[in-house]
Image (cartoon, rainbow, N blue to C red):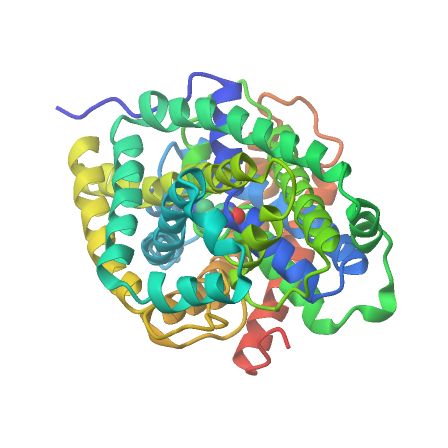
Length: 464
Ligand code: TRP
């Protein structure tokens, strides 16, 4: 006997879970980092344009495929291709999604695990002692923490355990329940930190940096980087939104949901920037352009400010929560594949797939030692082929997601007919004034823009 397929309890459950998938290390870590690197203002505007012109249309495409077929990515492509084309290659896009989920989760969970350790360091007061000396903290992070293999493996496994535990209880009982608790908390913590940051002396400078564009500082590479990041941060290109969309009912408006999820995601990313830049500016510390600022510079800076102990603890809890709702969605893609395609019960699917990914991730956890500068780690980003960790990240960010996104856009824009897509987008929405615009963006804008990333990767100009 097969279990009934999962469903969200309603609109709110879906929006919170999908927003939870979107908001993650990409927003709190990667976005501030690349915004800093690309000189703020103009980059922020370009990024927002990419989210609106490419991200939102592709998100709508993924969700519509999910709801239409009530299947996870492989099955969804199978079912939709059947009535529209003779080609049997399309389910390959779903397979690519499963491989991406596997790959991303195996390293994402390692970084996510760091937040557990740092929350503990902050709350126990140990971090305060260490952060008093920036050099010592950097040394601890690079030479002791990352190089300590067993410790890295331990926190990675704990985080995978939390992820498996959430997905195990199903769409409504697990994923949605966790999102409903963590997302409001996350927002609250962020809000507290935002209010705090408005009272620091670096706030004004941060606002100018972020919202006063200077287009002369913009490079071609920045435009591509903004687009690549839009994919990662919105969880697009591997069927995560497709899978979540397969659990919604027909009363939900897909265009509205996609818009809301993207809006929330962008809002949180900008809040994270305001907070971090205010704090950093206040201290006057020169930020090194390394991806480790979250674990080295930030505590050093925060520790000098009043009320810092609790603030830092909260900060790492925040990042951990954001990461957990994201790892859940990554595992759900792989699990739902086993449930829908292999006919496994959910419990077996989650435990088996989760354990295999956890074991594979151990290789990532162990590959960090000796990689002290850690400049090679950018969650989605430039070429970084050092070690297993860097290779996984490089593959997923530069190849899997853009190629997956490109194919999803081509499929929805060119293979599916307008009647099918319009019908699905208007279900629960009513006549859609922007349908023509959506179709234009998905047929031309998205493939061209994403194609540009792929070409630049092939030419070896990794967002330079
Ligand atoms: N969007 C998440 C972040 O910003 C990461 C993530 C979760 C993801 N699920 C995904 C990325 C699926 C790509 C595909 O951190």
